[in-house]
Length: 370
Ligand code: T4K
Image (cartoon, rainbow, N blue to C red; front, side, top):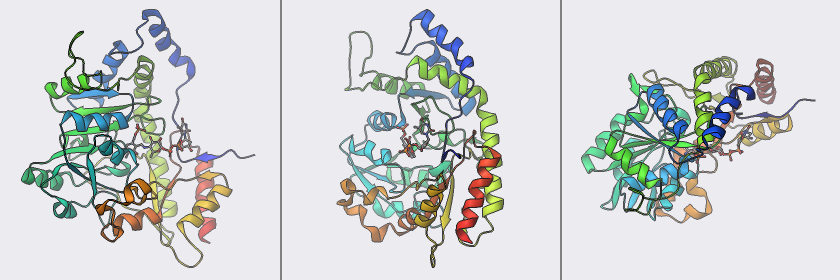
């Protein structure tokens, strides 16, 4: 009997390969608090990602919360409703107000042209999301931020390893936050990181994620416990060995989908940007609803057939009960985001998906449209 085909699955090396790492942890009895694996992973990630400084975290949500603290953000933060709730939750956890701005007409990211009209005297920062790893219009967003004296914190949860115009996408803006959750291209079971440009900022973030301790006796800020453990960091080091192969494998899946499904008239696939690399973390398709065809119809049909696609990101954050009352949640101002949210479906893509499974997914999608 066919097993469920999930939208994603973590790519796990052979268990035996992880045992020596565990043995080392057992031997030295150093389990957390900036241990040797933590330090090694920070170093190796800086090299792999081509960035200067990285601060590992227990997950991306705590990293986002801490990033806002680190830059002492106040008042209103402009962000996108087309994301995972963690983006705006991190703003709320800091007692700040998220201000939702619509997405681009031909993409999934915040529309820079609409950012300016959302700026008020209380705006202090912009938190855009590189959705599915597709780079935001980083240059235009930087121009706006410079004009108005705003900080930029990128939610780069999906953007592991992306290069834009020959440098790491994670070096744009003031800070970038990565997620290493089990469902991501690169995972440490749970985990995340803040990429920052200088040693002083790293020091401040490292204090904030360690209760605010400056030294053994001195606490200068109401920090949180956001530290990554040694087991997670060790697993990250092992993952890193296979990451290039895993991304190459995903690439094949991506192009097979594009070739096979791009020709179906009811399906729209948003093209990748020429100036950016990709990590193939998600494969979103947009369904053009008509007659008996609909996104939810396809979602249900696939589910009955054991293909667990996901509606990332539906509903919009601004449509969720706790955000609905905000004035920026007005659906008439978020029409592009709403449209995408109602038409998007993410198909299975991961480094353990077999050719046979992918062909089965393709066959089922085609069957629905016939
Ligand atoms: N910002 C953005 C833009 C994000 O997308 C996210 C997280 C964050 C911030 C916050 O990052 P973290 O704080 O989590 O580091 C998942 C993930 O839990 C979440 O990390 C992710 N975004 C979001 C887009 O997707 P769910 O509720 O869809 O996860 P779940 O448990 O339904 O998993 C999806 C599928 O993955 C399962 O059907 C099967 C497979 N799976 C999942 C897990 C956890 C596995 O095969 N093994 C596993 O261990 O949220």
